[in-house]
Image 1: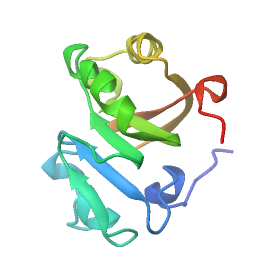
Image 2: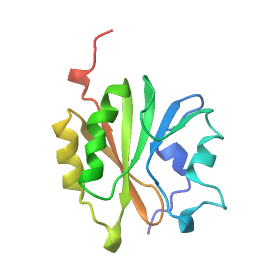
Image 3: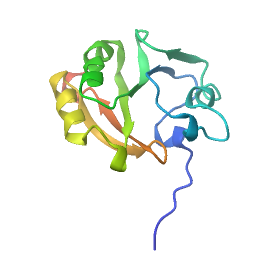
Image 4: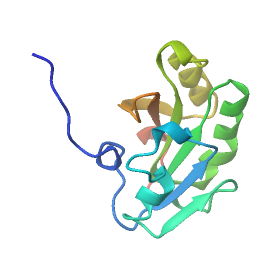
Length: 142
């Protein structure tokens, strides 16, 4: 029996009220709008602290980076310093036959800037997302 998940995508992505969120690039196509609302509009239901584009503000909780090529992954190095120690960068890319970026490429680019992958979520019917975080050993001690 196939499991059907009904949790909203914002819950699966760990978006909580009041978080500081940045969106870099176009994370969805016009056909992917949910009930006619963009991802940024749905985010605004959870938090009023949403930045579109770079640079990401300091102490950012979550970054959503649209990346469909290795060149677009270069933004990871610029975005990492803006993350809170327990923050995350979600790399959102096409999946299936339309995919132009492999998971191993995302993971290699993440390791190059001291990030590790720890979760994959279906962002939409056409897009997947991989969560990248700062390894616990590299987080500042408080």
